[in-house]
Amino acid sequence: MNLMAEQVEALTEYKGPATMEKLVSLAKRRGFVFQSSEIYGGQNGAWDYGPLGVELKNRIASNWWKEMTQLHDDIVGLDAAILMHPRVWEASGHVENFTDPLVDCKKCHARFRADMIPPENLAAKTCPDCGGELTDTRKFNMMFKTHIGPVEDTSNTIYLRPETAQGIYVNYRNIIQSNRMKLPFGIAQIGKAFRNEIVTRHFIFRTCEFEQMEMQFFVKPGADIEWFDEWRKRRWAYYERLGVKPEYLRWHQHGVDELAHYAKDAYDIQYLYPMGWQELEGVHHRSDYDLKRHAEYSGKDLQYIDQDNNERYIPYIIETSAGLTRTLLMVLCDAYDEEKVADKGNSDDWRTVLRFHPKLAPITLAVLPLMKKDGLAELAQDIKNELKEDFTVDYDQGGAIGRRYRRQDEAGTPFCVTVDYESKEQRTVTLRFRDSMEQIRVPIAELGERIRKEIKQYKRTK
Ligand code: ATP
Image 1 (spheres, rainbow, N blue to C red):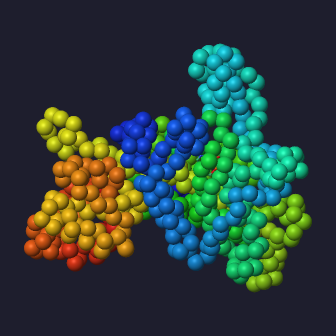
Image 2: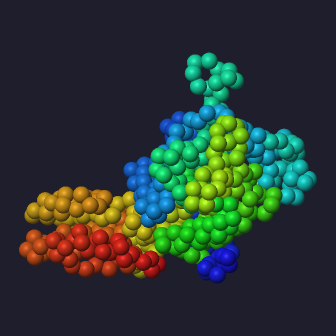
Image 3: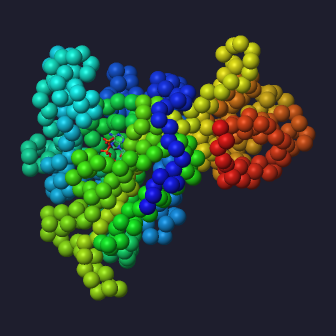
């Protein structure tokens, strides 16, 4: 398959208005993301999702879930435990191979992933920060280890899962039996994963605690290449449908030295974040590695019984693995815009706007009474109560209307409904669109239907 055929020419460097500093500050100011345990100075590698952040995260997750399960007859869902039998991680190869190469600077004590510093520094063993001498590279296992039960010894070691995929593999047999699945079929799962990352950097991009959205697709050996191509196509199309700027997306195929221990072939969908091109999602050909190893370590027969062809074999697996929290960062970056809207020479000339797809926006619409008095607030409350069954609705009656629009723009609210004096007499309201700032008059009775239609038809124009 020619992957490039469906791709517009990708940018070479980030030229958008977002910076990590701006995003971190907006995320905190508006309650998307807070530093974990902030009052104690913060906890590295962990972040908390505030009122808008959790809504956004839930929407991204439910959008992915719908795409993967509801829209695919051959994919079912799963929610496996984070704590798994420690043998799982021996079988999967994580105990032995899930390592990052680590180097320290003897002078400034900075710590680096050896594969992430310039090769010339690594070769000369000099620190990229201070020029000091680097230690030899050593392997560092990224799994978090703890103990289950009251006694801390090696017999009760347990790991926090570093990927959700293994929960799927160990349930593959259960699901075939309980749901009578036939190849090809997939199992989707969203959940937390934990990695003891050497360097956590770039806000929520790389963290020690994060969430993954993974789907493992089980296929007959021989059909694997075709399905691998197919899933790359589908995952690319998914981001296009979400309205992600196409020139900010590109493919990256793993070189032989980049391939994970289980992978036969692997492609990443990369996104152009403000700090550069980085992996957003991996589409991996995992061959029969995982199931074979689990069959060997568990002693259970994990062959698929292909009754149609009277054959038994271990299926091949095509994996699509996206970070939920990393997708959230992508959505924030992609939505972030600064726009000049006036020419008065003051700070009101510019607005910060998050151009979320309305399907993902944490607040779908805000109801704003022009005045608190003369029954406008009551009417606005009635409208809010009517619509909140179907949409996430915010209500804001404080301050000048222009300021309130700006607040909603910054939260990424795609629609504002303004209740004014005409609303009382004519039973109509103003519907304001976030992206164009255009305003139209809509009968109150038609509001819900109109918003539903706008969400369905939404196309990003800016
Ligand atoms: P990287 O090379 O960036 O360390 P990886 O290749 O190890 O990532 P995978 O094991 O393929 O990542 O994980 C699948 C997805 O999970 C990634 O595409 C990413 O979106 C997400 N992910 C992985 N590690 C992290 C992390 N530390 N923080 C947030 N998301 C992560």
